[in-house]
Amino acid sequence: MQALFTLTSSESKRLLGKAVAALPEVQHAKDNGYLVVGRGSTNAFILEEVLRGGMEKERYVAGQVIKGVLCVLPPGLRGQPVTLHKGEVLDVEPGSVIDKLTPGDLLIKGANAVDPFGNVGVLMAGPTGGTMGQFYMALKARGVATIYTVGLEKLIPSVEEAARYGGTMLLGRSIGCRAGMALVADGRIVTEIEAIDSLFGLKAVHFTSGGWGGAEGSVTLIVEGEEEDVTRCLDFVEGIKGEPPLPAVKGPCKGCGAPCSFDGMEEVELPAYLR
Image (cartoon, rainbow, N blue to C red; front, top):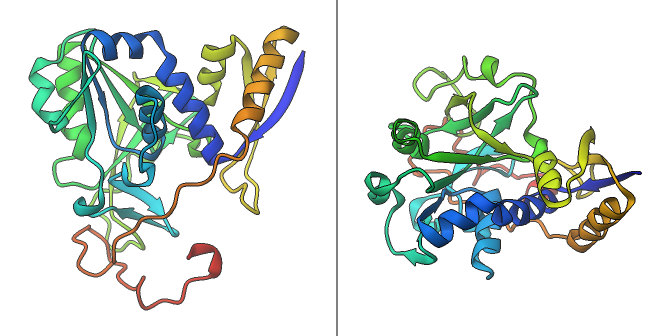
């Protein structure tokens, strides 16, 4: 049996949140070791499912694409990244536990791009590469796994090609925050396709993308499998339909400190759909 449905960006994030939170390796790390959940809007949905409680998801970001530009949420407006140890939330910055992480522990990291070849791209605007600069090589050296969560709205032709461009000191002008991109060719990726397989054991095909009138960034999927499993999947999708978009939280452009040549957000009269 085949079935078709469309997920808005927020509905995809809720699907990913539920699927990643239920992964055996995530549950094992949460209950028996360290689970580090990096900032990111999709990761906020995951964290909400892991902790089984609401949170200000719109503040659980650092870099973000908002109101038509790449941007950085000022430190004073951001939520602290969450690190769990044996089920307890620690009041620490994630970097303070790097030396304690061992195989079986887990980092959940958001991504900004994914391609058909299984590569993910992560934008970096900080001078030392942000979370990627802090964690990537250290965890690779230790054999500690990272899960990269990324919705199919971020599908691009080639992350390898894209990562050859950009850089905060190379870009001469940018309408939005300047950034470079890290290419990860060997990461564990979870998109809507892997999420549906994990939750329902179904094959999912990325059928179309896009929309308007609130469906911008949507992906349309076709799933195939036994009728009982397809029915369970569609019932689940009906349950997450209407997931609201996150409120826009953005600091002022002037004096924000991000590497950006666009400082006119306060003076420019934005179209209504960007306000």
